[in-house]
Image 1 (cartoon, rainbow over the protein chains, first blue to last red):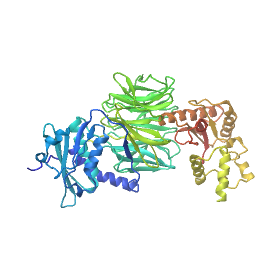
Image 2: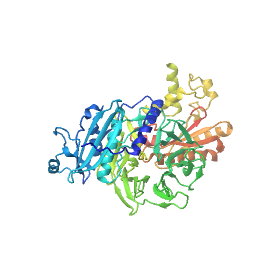
Image 3: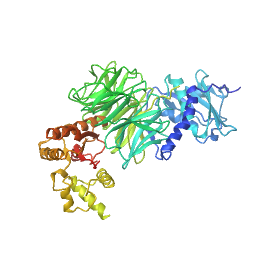
Length: 440
Length: 174
């Protein structure tokens, strides 16, 4: 029996095409990979986890890294799976006919991952995997990838994404990236890493603060605020070319960039006419127009995924609260009422849930609101949580927190059940932003 | 080396932070200043003649004081800072070519972007007062550093009060 080889997904081809450019851009700008990687510690588990066994791939030792370890870690980190011991089987099965299904059934395994790796004559590698449904003794997915030694991690994330999507019905986020700022002594770095914190690259290093990174919807650009000219100025930075340009440097302060879902416009906060007010502009900084007028602070704009509304923070009612207004302009309506400090609204991609930061008894905690029922749930019990950011599938929320006076990144599932902490040794980590799916 | 020490001392006095513990941020700010081309005399031995020549740098002159402090979550200018702002407004009025950058700052609590907005409000409150007292509006740019450039990094009320501040910088000082 021959391994049925599924065609390579289109998005994979595209990613392979862009990958060298991205890498080249990073290397041009900076001195290579960052030594201190983010390490992830899982501090809570989810319910209804799917029992899965990831068996070693036959001959996976030819690869420069253990691909199945990375796949298993991805699945485990999502909180949706319970990974089972899969060792002690010899020889390793590569086809369903070689799998002892009744044995796996007796271990209550629902899904089994098998595969094989081989070195190709041109120095690249081929990795094939199959996802099997144990109770039905059938194949759920089978994909083959051709890769270089530098793409083992990326391929593992792709495989984990396929497994995740087949078993949960939702898209996986293992191949997405995160942006965050690291402060070390008086040096600030904007870094881009894989969603598991590995492979971090420095996109920008500065002696002055950098805040508010915001991903363009296609994941090729970041808007952010830099203080390198002794005041806040908004930049847009291409991750493909490594080039960046100023998009808002008006008299006064320029901050809080947010992309419209079409990727063509930015909402920003400018003080050029006095006070902190909302403006819209084209992504190249042209066609600046005022969005709202108030005598109060209006800041932290965030577009609803359908582009219809802009959520923002305002103290027009006496305390900072979250409001929303039509993106075309019009009357704002108040969204949060509970408590005296509700800020930093960020919406899930389906537009149903809003993450925000709420001050309760002097503690700044991460909260979510179901926008239909307006029900609020506090997700964390820490004291200094800020800058929430949804994973593109809406399952997890990445945010900045503090442990022992040091900034760390943490993630919590939108239902509050799964908790993770990501930290960099000897650095102050803050301002995380979870990037979008790499589109087809 | 001696030159650097004098500059550091002069700046310490200039910023009225002689009683402040030397935190990382404070040190960095001082290094920044001495490394960039500062106003005349700032990196020179403090000779009386030169200090007279530049009232902004004379520690005996009120114009060498540059900070206005605020209460928590407030942009109200406390009465004690009135004489200071009167002196700077008079200087700006008398030196029509003088330009000022007003940087508003906040303590670290709360959202970074909201704190940018609060710092902006503080900077604009100081600017409004200076204009009210005779300075011309185009002479002054009010900007915010939010919570990003704390002068003091301890998590104490005293430290937070030190960071709720508006700083007046003249051309050549930023």
